[in-house]
Amino acid sequence: MLIAGVDEAGRGCLAGNVFAAAVILNPEFPIIGLADSKALSEKKRGFLSEQIKKYALSWSIAQANVDEIDNLNILQATLLAMRRAVESLHIQPNEVLIDGNQLPKISIPARAIIQGDKTVQEISAASILAKVARDESMYEAARCYPQFSFSKHKGYGTKLHCQEIEQFGILEIHRKSFNPIKTLLLQK
Image 1 (tube, rainbow, N blue to C red):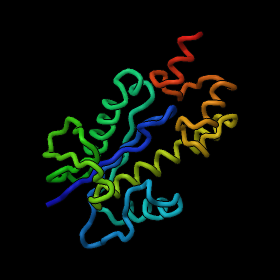
Image 2: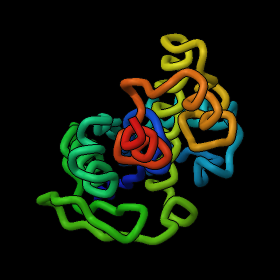
Image 3: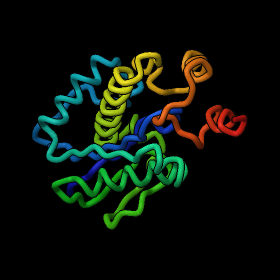
Image 4: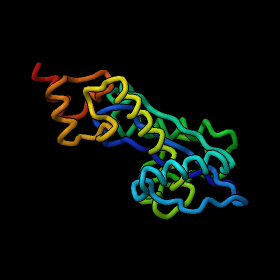
């Protein structure tokens, strides 16, 4: 039975797309060290991401952009990214296991597993791919917008990021439906 694990990254950020990944692991090539991406160092995530891409039976990374996040809401945009990730797998799984308590609209039998990224290897693998891809997008944002420290705060609503928004303004990659950006736009 082929199981795909699915997880997201970047749901709580103020900037950038939300990413989702789907992974079907190969039982003949176990990947040692899989865990929730948040529990791993950036270096370890990078190494495991390469291993997953090399040894998994199938993997995919998808995203929902800032406009979709602002138009649909973050939950629906996340579910959309998850659906895109599952639909992009080149092998169809028998079942999909999704981190969290919500399921995207997909035609394959699926189960939501709260904290699945800590307990299900396939979801852990998806968590790692999504986080690495999301972080790479933030490094690209740092190159495009050098006045913002996206390589440090990764778009999250840290004190530094909020100070940068106040000082330099709102960028096209900022989520206009998220506070404090939404409040700043209303004040203009």
